[in-house]
Length: 193
Image (cartoon, rainbow, N blue to C red; front, side):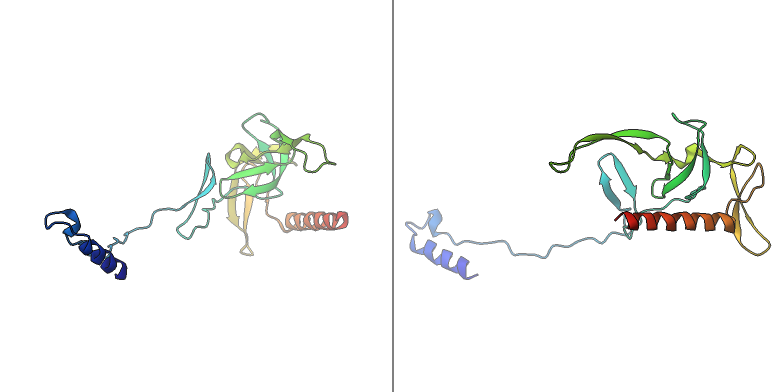
């Protein structure tokens, strides 16, 4: 306000004639507060992952996780793609885009640049994800790939089973084997460090 008053007084002192511009008073439009309309329903937030891939997110910015018929440690048969007919074990599951990594399947070459002066650049093979719809659970005993079903046992536990054979996948023995394998891997990594 003080600046506009000083500007107006300096303009008044410069007035040459009554009809010149410098003699006119400066008038500014009154400032009005900006009104913002509230939105009725918030839109889905899309987290920026890469320019060709988007993660769907809930309104609280957490990714939408899909239910999957396979878990880590399951034996599966690949039913589509270059590795069709091969059998392997699931090592990692990505629930946000329904993909899995199967051990020694869908190998892609990756060109790695040298990190330091001592290291050399190299070409390595990595396991790329496969969509979960392209794998089926597999029974080693009966050599059959089957869809998965869910049932509740007499003791009240909900388990997965193979529809063709009736073999229960989620048994306590399988879980104990998985836990032992993971603990061995952790101890080997700690020993290597």
